[in-house]
Image (cartoon, one colour):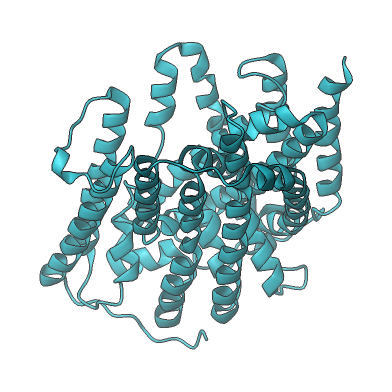
Length: 473
């Protein structure tokens, strides 16, 4: 085996070796689901910051940031980093939910405010999100070990999945949080190295200029990201689960700081896309840029993708365990060993099922369509914005939930079907801005207005609901 082929596997072994020293050997049920220390203490501020930040620097987001910068220039990277304002939206929204109601999770809040059926609909939505997190991250990582469908590719998928499942079964959320801190430090070091290598060349070449039409397309994407941040964070349990493991003031500080840290990371990594555009490189910037520079840079990119994918996968597994063992039955008592066993079974199942979409490559032309059809887009969950951010309205109840949730889902499905069929289903007047995201921006802006109007109309017919003030701050 050639050295260039062997070295990525050495990087993978080194990565596994570092993480295995951090994962706790035995955890209690409270640690497994709540992320507490052995003595029962909640994670500290900086541990929360590192964990929340790296969990959102997932492999696909890094890849997307570079690709958008290569397409739109500076506005592409800025647009993708705008999504990280989600941390601030989540922090503020969940702070009010916890302060006014003392709830232990979003599902607990939804059951109390809107009823158990609303909570179940929400949990199904985020379960699909968790399902997608598995294959999307293992795929991006595996491509550094071989072309899609190759022997190296599939061995990497298995290796990354099995290792992450192994330490997730051992540590649950506590193990995820502890490994996140190591992964955040490693990712930061690797990013600095990448910037040091690419910086001089990009400075000499200059920031790539784009024409007015491309600039408008980039600004349209920026606007789309800003509209979606009001709903986007609430359908990601990897983020919201961490909003309930510390006291509220620490949570707000931690999430705001994590948003700044991870958003800055994404913006800086988009430099890879700018470098690709400046030098006229064709193809995926996250692959073509390191391949152009040489093997050492390719290994660094390999390591940063492993780090980012691993941090998201273990968080996905921990959230899946909590969703099935604690949130779906809406358990409010202290977790016990039976909950832990159930959570571990769910981790194994989500790991197996979550990688099945990768087999779509063997179906032929239908493969990409099947992959796309599994995706719950940011558009589909636009109705979550009023459901959570306007929950202080006392008369909002079950009707308000459904009048906000279902229109957003319908608009999202229309966008997905348009993409699958390549045929317009919505009128041209709905477009706002320019470029490929004009349709999405129009749908999200008008759709969010409609979902919010539906939520408010629902208050006319809903019975009065109240939050009970709690001493949670």
